[in-house]
Image (cartoon, rainbow, N blue to C red):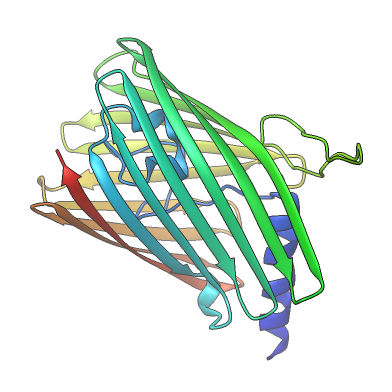
Length: 267
């Protein structure tokens, strides 16, 4: 195991212990906040987007920065009506040294025509080698608003509150706030903007151009000031199956790749 591998494992483990970032799943290389239509990964990324989502089973696996000892897996099962949505999700990340598991239950309501609200409760289990086990839980809250046919905005707060253990000690949960905006330049082209902030990291600015060639093919081209990253996401849908591929390029750490598969159980 070389120095780069040790550094990446240490950095990612620190990030998980302190919730330093918001993880996106699926081919949305740009954003976990603004969903492209009815996201197949809403229960993982943004519970407010569960409204009007089809009954879908989804799987996503990624390899951070090309390090063979690291992986991230996400699964989600979700369904909804025009006014209510629900989903269950599971995340697993790690290597031989540590494992991180997160189980989430999400629900969404649509109190008005243009507003949807989502809530996600999650339990986290982290094991470091064979000697330490950490368990904690929290709540994520998200709101999506569509003021007109051209604009959509979404607000996401991860780790909304601090819960206490049986001993009265507080968890060191790092709250992350994400705000995103989608603007329809024309029918099949969108401009996406996003701001992410937490106590442990400086403000991250992201921008992307999303192009939908037809009902089968989607492409996202994105950039971020976090490590001067560039990203590309491609989604292809055939009947009830959606296949996705995404990668990001970090100026120092290198490439991260992601593959995703979603199956539409019921329309």
